[in-house]
Length: 136
Ligand SMILES: Cc1cc2nc3c(=O)[nH]c(=O)nc-3n(C[C@H](O)[C@H](O)[C@H](O)COP(=O)(O)O)c2cc1C
Image 1: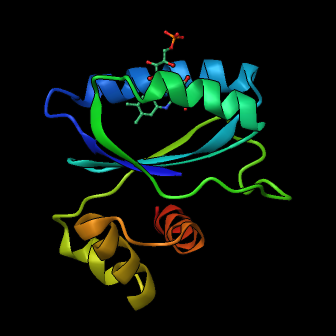
Image 2 (image 1 turned 180 degrees about the vertical axis):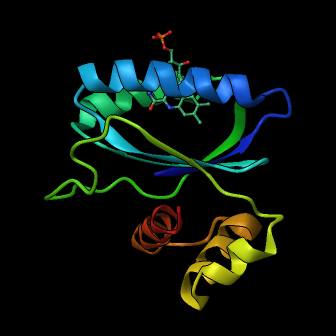
């Protein structure tokens, strides 16, 4: 799981391109996960074989569409959270106060601290991701 800053020149079309190539490539590599994006941020949770994830991460980290990539956590997991989805993609709007109201306190705190200093544990962020998914 990592967090990164969305580049200013990463427009909606670029995000759609990311989604298209991810669906294709992740399916082949048996990688699943979810990418959340806002105007300024990506939060990406990936699951799969360690080597496959590493290979993918080598590509992702050089991608011009984001910067300041910060790895939150790399841990072995027994079960996948999103076994049927090579790439779920969801937007979230940090400017929308309704969005913040919909998050419970714990999730809002997690998100706030990601925005401020990326200081959260993977499982807290994951529960926040699932909450954001559920809001849609
Ligand atoms: C935030 C972000 C997340 C990405 N996630 C993935 C991903 O999960 N899978 C993937 O194949 N490419 C992902 N990419 C795109 C890769 O950096 C790269 O452009 C793409 O894999 C190239 O695909 P291609 O070799 O099929 O053209 C991501 C890019 C960004 C900026």
